[in-house]
Length: 333
Ligand SMILES: C[S@@+](CC[C@H](N)C(=O)[O-])C[C@H]1O[C@@H](n2cnc3c(N)ncnc32)[C@H](O)[C@@H]1O
Image 1 (cartoon, rainbow, N blue to C red):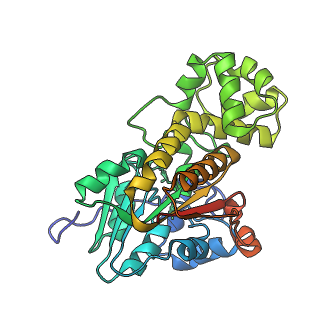
Image 2: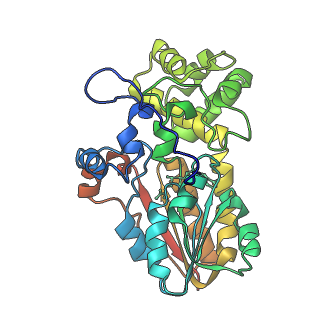
Image 3: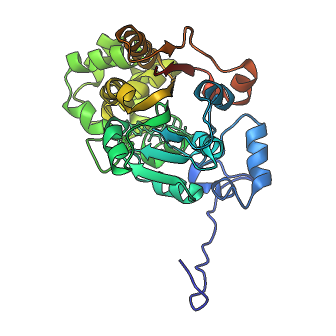
């Protein structure tokens, strides 16, 4: 913070080759999107995601199934950049509340500062801890609950976080870098059998066994080294993408968190409350579909999505990152 007695620190903008910055950290105009709205608009018009931002997916469809109303309590379990949260928040006004959860201690404070206002509160929490968050907020339940699974574009695009196969960085992949082990440690400590199982379970990798034999126990410390190791083993770009996805899911224990959340979510809904989940791969969607179906049979839900809802062709064209998204919903009686 600066006041009148302390002149603002002048930071020299990063140097880069060529006319336009290509590296994530050099895209200073996109990082300061509020000041450079033209640049952001151009990037969006080209079907890309500006550096340091996340484009919310299937917003219209989510609002249609969640029907947030003035005065209601909405929980965004995966706050990210806050795109969905902002829309939910607008619709529960006047008198409503929005609670945002995220495990990422790097992005959460930035989003919390962007959204700051009456009736909004952010919690640094795994969504499996939703019951505790509701207790802390002195709530017995929520009317609207959303989870948009996986990683945000801010996490994915920043090479320093180690999620991307497109640039070099430390092989980390933790959404919360303060907990657990980075992907490099997981790879070094795992066995071929365990690695093959997670490549199959987390990414439907067809060559899981042979890849696991080559990669397990190896010292691979950067994202570029991992991509090269997979290509040297005969894999193509899709194989590299699947290996990155499988490791990311394992490093962050994503499927256990999802299973735990699916178990507790009916009890976190007020009577008549609605929940929606956006998934991005078959391992997630299978779990959500099964949990909603058994919840309906058990009477925890009065209604569930009969069919999965997909992004419109226009959205898939405008934002290729929406391509694999699947939306499901359920309603408590
Ligand atoms: C796809 S992004 C959400 C983007 C958000 N809907 C938006 O409009 O900006 C997923 C977010 O969920 C967070 N996340 C993933 N797993 C989580 C978990 N188990 N508990 C809480 N947050 C989680 C990630 O850190 C990431 O910020």
